[in-house]
Image (cartoon, rainbow, N blue to C red; front, side, top):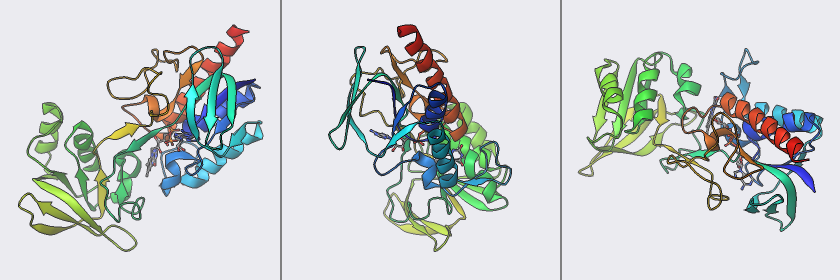
Length: 306
Ligand SMILES: Cc1cc2nc3c(=O)[nH]c(=O)nc-3n(C[C@H](O)[C@H](O)[C@H](O)COP(=O)(O)OP(=O)(O)OC[C@H]3O[C@@H](n4cnc5c(N)ncnc54)[C@H](O)[C@@H]3O)c2cc1C
């Protein structure tokens, strides 16, 4: 039987694999069949991951993490985990090809999915003006015009943060009712660079190589175009927990519940790391840090279980 299975190959999974492999746990990483490397495979320049003064392309960063994990002996399986049995001392993970892997410990690092608007050109222009992260991409929009879609705290935070760079920030929301806390809402409303546009839905994105504008549809069905350079989508994120939500305890936010600052879930020998436990920060570096925590927790668990 194996010591450790890691499900997911984003910064959390690969960092856990590097630490676990260096501790001689011979981890196996189930990478996903089509999305190996995680969310950063979907982006272009990553400017905020330490160690890359000139920035690094997302896919290059993830290929480097993969190579580093493999260098220490982590085994990669390019398949999906389709079902799991996580209770009891022997954990079982069934793969898409029908194989069943067994291990004494499992790290869940399946990430989370930013909610999308569901528009035709959204995926094509992702990384070319369409973004889900102002912290990551805001600095690319210095002296430009951008729009943020959403009505919650994260939309207010993104809009306020973007005023550091952009000359103009539109805050677009489908109604006049905001989920955002009164304090966050008033801070955004008081900012002279932010213009609230309510009662609108974004129904189209224009741009050949990069975003040049969007179509807004009003509640009466009329449409108009708005010229912008960047569109930040801040309508929430869904942790990817469907695989294990029936046995692993989740928080109200839908993330995996962990014990304090550790990665321990409600099940002995099951650890979780990265965006799947994080309702707040959702950054590559925080995911990587939490992957290291999970590997160390798994190592201590396996040592004490001997
Ligand atoms: C377009 C975009 C740009 C971004 N830019 C930046 C940036 O510039 N800087 C920054 O710090 N952050 C950025 N982020 C956020 C960053 O990518 C995430 O915070 C980070 O990738 C989270 O790492 P993770 O390992 O927790 O999850 P993920 O990277 O989401 O990886 C999870 C992996 O698990 C896999 N998986 C899920 N379920 C299964 C299963 N059943 N079986 C096998 N595999 C499974 C997924 O397919 C995925 O490969 C960006 C995100 C996006 C979407």
